[in-house]
Image (cartoon, rainbow, N blue to C red; front, side):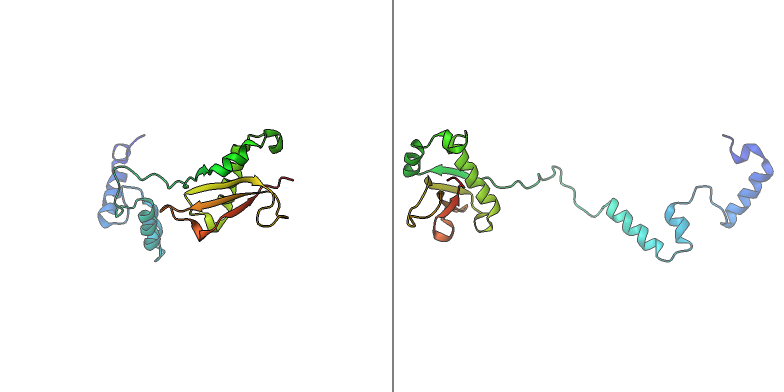
Length: 165
């Protein structure tokens, strides 16, 4: 590609005179400079866009923080629950292991119930059973949820219904 100065000396002198008067620029215009001459809001728009794309005012950590992870739920079984579990078979739970299946039901209940969403631990007081204080109550797991301090949430146990007949 030929430059202006090597092509035609008269054209080069004309360009030099126009550049000295400020009528032309040797460098191409940026988007801001082009639109800024006709649009009074262009400067504000382009400055705001630069700040969002290249935030120089933000402090950069040498090691960025990891994204927050959903808290996990520790589950443990009471002695009575373990005794209930020994009489249950995988055939009753559709081929699944009774302990793992009931723990999964408790985790699902914890994930979808706002009242216990902040719990960090769950104690299965009784494995899946029918009745209890109400003899007509359907099959359920009796669970107590604990918060990070180890305090029982709402001072009572929850019934997690299994849907089993």
